[in-house]
Amino acid sequence: MKKLFMTLVTVFFAMVVMFLVIQYMPGDPVETLAAEISRTENLEINLATQKAISILNYDPNVPTMERLFKYIGGILRGNLGESLVYRKPVVTLVLGALPWTLLVLTISLSLSFTVGVLMGIFIAWKRSRWLNSLLTLWQSVFGSIPDYIIAYLLVFLFAVSLGWLPSRGPYSATVTPGPNWPFISNVIKHAILPVMAYFLTTVASWTIGMRANALSVLGEDYVAYAQARGLSQKRILISYVGRNSILPMITSLAVAFGFMFGGSPLIENLFLYPGVGYYLNNALSRRDYPLMQGMYFIMIVVVVLSGFLAEKIYAVLNPRLRER
Image (cartoon, rainbow, N blue to C red; front, side, top):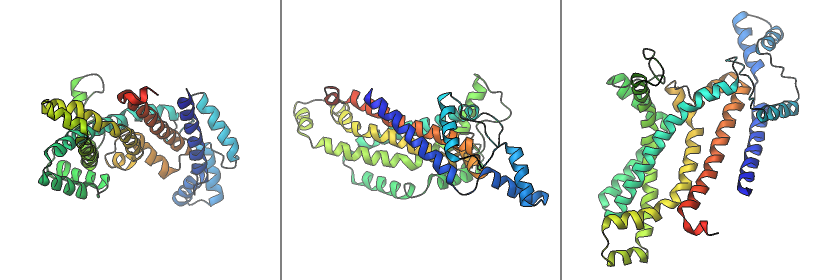
């Protein structure tokens, strides 16, 4: 209960800081829309400002603390406000965007973590020089290039040049959404490129981390004792090396999920994937404060809860922590 309380306190203070940063960032929805109206309709800035206020139904002169208390009260009631651009409740937009982001991030992170862990154990066990060199080269290339650059290259290769995969949207307009195989297969096909962009830039880091942990475990006395007893390599790798090497990776897995969730706007905007990052990017460009606050709030909750769950999973996997 103490840890759960600290988690809730962390979410609250992070939410307050996020709200204040958004409120005091340069520009606001009225200024952005007023400048656009003044430019397109050739109106004076004062008239354009009044028109923007009436269109957005947003008063920039309301004190910040009054807005903060109103926002906190709305969250307690499950109300995140209404988007100034989309004219829809933010909760509706969040619930519609969250599954698409979770789909891509869950698949890509699961693949990169699983492949990285298996490759790390294998490379550490074999102690192959050329495999280590290949891993270092992979990390040097893909680890130094931002994931959205990799995404551009993937779109150019597989969507533009070869035409094998779609590059825009979560599914084609020709399929009917629902629990049917044509729709599901089309969603999977559209998710391949975003998943590849995340996978290629993260798998090497998991491999390097797991290799380092496995090499450390292989030097322990109990591994040498297991080998002296004549246990099979498979049992030693799984029961001794793998189980003890993967424990430190659990916390890293939660942290990585939080970072990927927060870094999704560039990837989702490139692929026009209607996830949390896509709507957040649109909200930032239009200064849609309620939508920005809603999307950032979801990111905060996901990151904090990921750390909380990682700690619980780590305690389950590590008997020494369960005894405390």
